[in-house]
Image 1 (cartoon, one colour):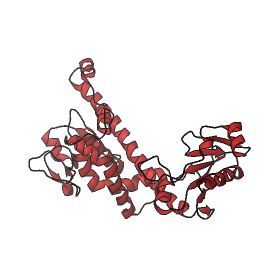
Image 2: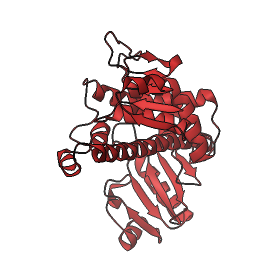
Image 3: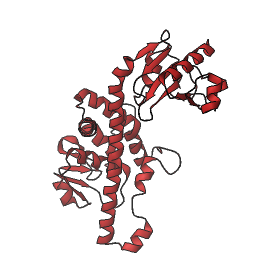
Image 4: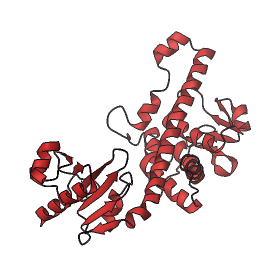
Length: 313
C-alpha cells in the first residue's frame, strides 16, 4: 500500500490521518510530495490531490466547493475525513493490541465517535482556522506543529535533501506521538466500559449511602454520579499501596463540589493527628480539600466512613 500526503510543513490533521492508516497497515509505504504523478499512484491520498472520495482512497479538503462537515456543523479536514472512514476499525485494532479485548464493531464505532468529539474535531477546527483547540501554545495542533523544523534547523541543514530527510523523520515522530494519543484514548474507554459492570455490581453499605470497591483502580466516578444517587462516599482498596481510601462523590462532571464533604475537623491532618481526631489508630491522611482520606485497614476506613456519614446526618 502506498500512502501519499503533501510535502513541506505538516500539521496535526495530516499527521493524525496518516497515523490512522499506519495503525491499520503498518507496512504501508509513505511518501510526502506534491508530485501529481506520485499522487495519482497512491492507494490512500491524504490532504493533497483535490479530491474527497473515500471509495478511491482520496481524502483532501482544500478543493473549491468542498463543504464536508459533521452533523454538528464542525467542518472536516483530513483528520476527520480519514477518521470518519476508518476510525471504528482503528479503535478495534488498538483495543485488541493494547487491551487484549475484542470490541464489537458497534462498540468500536461508538468509541470512535467519542474520540472524534474529544480530539479529532479540534484538529480539524485548528487546521481550517475556525478555532484553537486549547488556550496558549500547547493545544494538540500546536504541539504537533512544533515537530516541524524551524528556520534554524533549515539554515543548519540547508534546503535540499538533508532538510527533507529531517522533516520526514520529524513527521514520523509526530505520528508516533499521535498514535500514542489514540491508543491512550482507546485504552481509557475500553477500561471504562469494562469497569461499568464491576462498579454496578459492587457492594453497597449503610442503606446504599456507601459503596465499596475491591479495586481502587476502577474508574467509578461517572457511573456512580449518573446511576447511584444515594451514594455519598466510596471506599476503595488501593492494592498497589496496600491501603484503603475514602472518596467523596462529585456532584457534577465539571465542578469540585461533592454530594457530601468529609468532616471539616479532618482537613489537612495526617497520621497521629488524624488518629487523635477520628479515634482510628491506622488513619493515614485527609486532604485539605476534604475529598479523600486514607487508612491502612478496611476496618479503619469503614469507621471513618461511618463518622463522615454521621456528620452528614
